[in-house]
Image (spheres, rainbow, N blue to C red):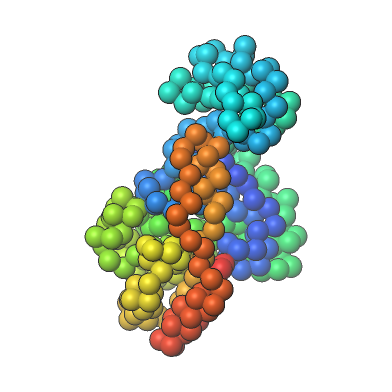
Length: 311
């Protein structure tokens, strides 16, 4: 059965010439919506399923063009540190986007738009020459693409119909039924291992890790999909050597020696995005040093595994 290319989802980014989401040159498609709430989330605009207003205060000149077009009277002029800007009261804002077109300084934008499978694949296949020459392809990410079974299944099918290799970035938090429908259309599964302690996993992400680990083993052993294990290394949360060693043991003993481990050092992009969504920024998480990341890499390699920083 061919892919249904009329299925829709909310897409918040289609990133071209991506080299960090699988092998080769890729296009990464980000679906909006996620069941997890990781405290360090790099894409907080991906959490909710509907389009959201993002406001960049530094670009605002307080020209006031946005104020009269807001149907909910959510915008007013505020002053902070001697700079005036158009403040948006998030309790009144309905994310309608009326203020975006009125802003001449690109201080306001909507994160997310509804797209069909056909519209997304039309954009992806423009880069097929790069995929073919580099061993790349399309990576489906999020948010959490497994929340959107019909769209993810049909987009991955459509990519294969176009001769495009597929990869997925996922927490693997889903039912077995969802896993069994999506991953037969996946050529490489990039699976997150956020913490090996289930209680801490639930504390930091909102969900336990039991079903996640079960799903990753099922994807690798039963569905025969190649897996890369990705570990976001978050200072003070999961980057201690006890947890990294436990992660390496899981990959070694429960998966296989051919599973690559990607160690992803924390960065601050999510903090500035939180500010643009009207949320408080958390500057307390430190960025791990290059030297410490090398120590973690060596620790994983001591288990006979291939490890890399990034990717």
